[in-house]
Image 1 (cartoon, one colour):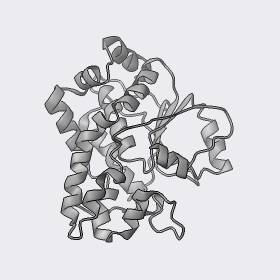
Image 2: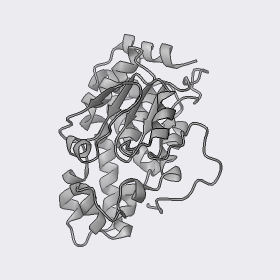
Image 3: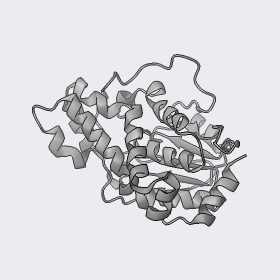
Image 4: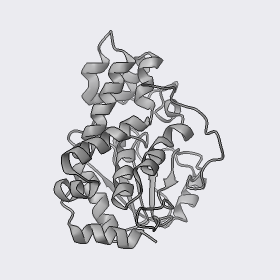
Length: 273
């Protein structure tokens, strides 16, 4: 259950994608229809991969979005190695000290196995996606509360823009009532428009110094492939876990993230048209 990671997008790039020179996968979560007959408001919630290579032209484009908050879901190690220095309109940038962040450091034992097979990495990714909503509970809850309080337009991102960011995007869209097939489609779009070997610097002549990147550069390409995918089964594993344990995504965010009915209603009132 693994496919090649990067396949250039077959059609035109969706209008929700903001083309930038120094960042990939920067896109709007708005425009999706919901089960209640409304749609997610455009240009209010954005997601992205790493932003540490933005150009002056990129900053001008982002500046026009009038962001009120930027949430960096990366670890302190990642932020220190690849810092994002904002220019233009000031924004509130929030980084998180996640204890169990699911990054490659926590998987070191698996990747040092000399007999490691792609199937084992796929299984590892499925387990990771079941854990991400819990491991990042504080960070994800903070973003949801800001949205409920009307602090948007808002952007959140991590390094690759597909795992930590992808799970949070899926939770938000699901909470707003976007049908699961469309949420999965949005998640899977990442690997269609992003070359993740390039995004993570795996072929760079000069490595960033991050331990996770160093490990990946030493592995066979077929072993790395499952790590770089946004395979639909990954996000399905997230849904299966949350719905199996809590019944619905809404019940999950109330129980684990501490949101209440007022918060959830505010999210829908403010972010649906």
